[in-house]
Amino acid sequence: MLFLATACAPAPQPEPTASVVPPTASATPTPTPEPIVEPEAAFDVTCADVTAEMTTLVGSPAGVVDETLSLVSSAGWYPGPAQHMFQRAGGIACSTGDSDRSWEVTIVPGAQTVTAGAASRNGFSGEEARCDMGRCFVQILDGEILVSSTIIDPALTAEDTQRIEQGLRSLAASAASTLRDVELPESDIVGAECARLLTAEELAAQVGGEAFLITTFGGWGIPSEVYQVVNGSRLCYYSSGADVYESQGYLTITTLPGGAWAFEQLTQGSTVAIEGADAAIAGFDEFDQPVLDLRVGPDWIRLTTYEGAGISDLTPIAQQIVQNFTVGRPAPQ
Image (cartoon, rainbow, N blue to C red; front, side, top):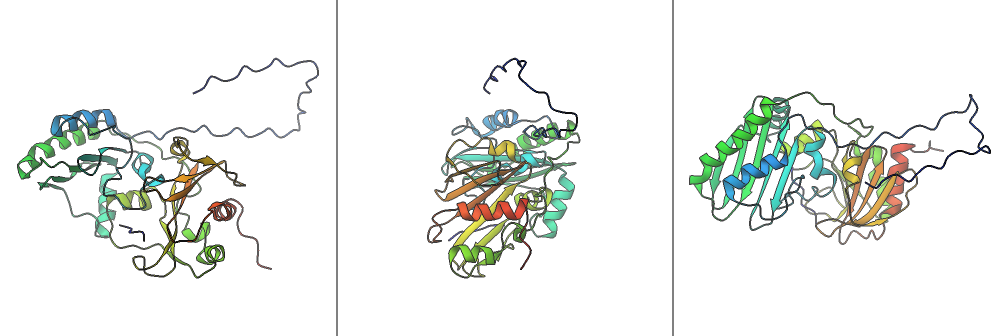
């Protein structure tokens, strides 16, 4: 059951020969694909800067520092597109470590809008800085910059609160002093409701039983605000019943609008053919759950299924989603 909280060098080109016939003036040119580029942060603070500050505060990182959200004690829908949500929003996310010792720091612009939206959904109650029993939680506002951090270290006590808060405030100040406008990557999937991708009835036909589409979950927070409101992504969960905690999970769909750059960073899995998709990779996520990742134009869509779901092959479902999104459903007969 799923618990959901709220460059290779280019090959040389041959010289044309006399037998090559140039296109006629009336020929339609082949569209040039948009280049795949990583979104630009709205400030000059990087994960290298964060790592340097965190090393001063809590010691050397307990492993490689990733430029993604941490999966330590994270929501079950984080692996994949959602881990890159802060970058898509013009921010950064930096994390390292494991369940014994870890830290995560996120910095996002547009803080006043983000926090007001989250507060309206009971997901933000103002600045905080507290350390106790090996854990620290920090939320800092500096104008239009929001810094959030979770630190796990058995050595941390309440006496560490002030110095950790001061260190993170210095990162917030650096980000605020270099803040600039950036354009979010364009995407057709922004705001697309779950049923546009896949209805409960369409999934029911695939699994051979009743299916429910759940889009509202208990709890909210800054990540949910960034993912669903700032980025316009949707969290689509399909199960055997209407109660997310009591039903068999069938499928989750998560997305990263304009996330082709992050999709291209996938290093594991097997390539599969999905008509209408620019690329598709089947594999397993960090929780060992079967996934199928799709790149459709500039967007990254992930399908995740679960033990007991009875879905042995995500390919037909992925094909349905791509058709629905890119072509649309056929008119009823």
